[in-house]
Length: 408
Image: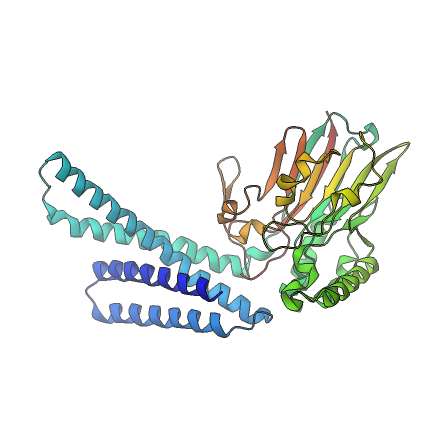
């Protein structure tokens, strides 16, 4: 953590240097320059000191640090990148003319060009600045219903048109009691879809099972004709509080299981159930968390599918989408559809349907949001209902997924 803070601090100094150069170009007013410099140094100092002294289990402190960092850092990053790119272009042009022996153009126009580019950069930087503020105030409650229809040639006929509602990554410990009505609006949006089945794909809480308690009465109102099923995510273990204390982790999970039972969510821990319609059925399989890197790898697909025969139709609940590429897609028993979450879409990105879908999280998780297909196997990654760390969402909105199974 200390090395990461040091790296970010050095990057921040480079960004601050370029941003100050832009202000120097745009104004000769020393008061404005000094004001900018004073605010920038103060903000950088606050971030540095707070990141060292912060209690990472105090959500108020974490939300303040992450929100303040995003508001300060991202807009300046945009401004600095524009100036850095312009510097690279100038250097490239200079070297090209030197190598090609072409005369170097008159440089008197450069200050005006720099001023125009600095002004443009400042204007562009205002977009993420305002977007982050909007994301903190409203964006994290801007719930969206995303509907997906998937065709399967071997879907049992009785399940043609079957609707599955998926939530993921509620992170209930991040919400405050004053957010109750806003969260309730999201649950109402889900219920209005009248799903046949409800599934929750992990991370009920941030760390402790008790974070779920204030929300039990609301979560109990979720409706689904054929039942409600859930799995564990990496945060449900309490590992970020208890470390490697397996006894404490297990107590946390057991309590979480009790809460899930109290609201009629059937917590699947490396096990499967059959859903029957008429004389046909499909399997719902739920595994414990399995993730790349330092995340728990308790998901046991062999154990979860021990009662499943080849040729049966299977839907897998697995919190971390990396499980799909690492194990699921090549598993001996076919998982027709895997439902995951975990990434949150990093709660930051750009999505314009049919035009662009981008978030920095894609460089960590290639399959980070929406529907993916590998041959005849599908993975859907939910963007998450709640938030963690950064108390907002910018461009990647909280999601309620409605998946319709179709025979085709």
